[in-house]
Image 1 (cartoon, helix red, strand yellow):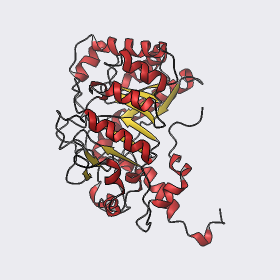
Image 2: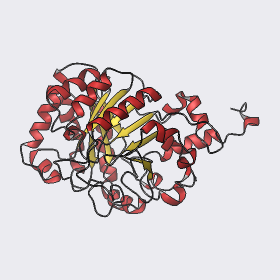
Image 3: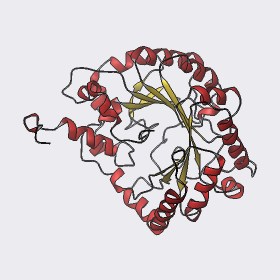
Image 4: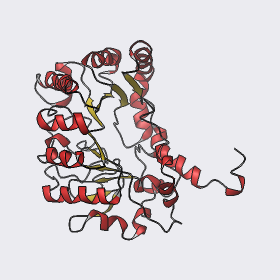
Length: 356
């Protein structure tokens, strides 16, 4: 299997890369879209960026919003016609609480667009699980607690929920199919000492990978670093031990646990990735990225409440350059490193390309 997490995937689409800069006159379809079908979720994670009062993500989110069924089918028609390569369902809420997810996934399974989802795993059951197992590209389940008690404390759910999620993952793997099942273990000071044992338990559960990621506790990079610094070395040691002792050709451990300032500071003035990967919210607004979703003042590109997505996308290219990352994005950004790579590539002096 090749690299699943490469930062260089976009360079496999040279025409798209060439169309990105402000000087280009061509608008091509996005490669990847995150659709937030609903803002409903039965879990109440204390660190959830969509619910935390002191984090900018989700600031203008209405927890009752969901994309109407007919509008969702229209969106799927448009992205297939436009040639979009992939769709990821994410929150907002949990996509598996969206009452039309089964129909939406079945519709995608009939067409050319690859699809995946993030979820808490509590509703990974029944027909929709079967569709994802046999036609989805991947599922990633977010977990923080290491046992029933800690999980219920993190998420405000009953003590049986952790067992339900574990059972759902085991049952999902028994369905067979090609869907890659991953777990994202969100690290904070409470679970830092359980990293190795948790990864071992996930391996025994049968998942394909564990991604280890830091909990975001502030809009400021320095404040996040201050939070994680006391546990940083221990977490890195436990992940390294897990990789050495547990990783195999069929069980991947992906270490994205890191100090965070490099994800916050931006010096560039336009965002390449908002044309490659952006967000359709449950409120039918289009947002620049997953780190600015439900930010009406600095992340909003427009609305498709009263127009088709394809018409919105190809109309008025200037909307892609209204957001200045150096000014508007002084917060966590998953695309920061990728944006820097794309801009560095596009700004290479053509007279010196041969001097590799």
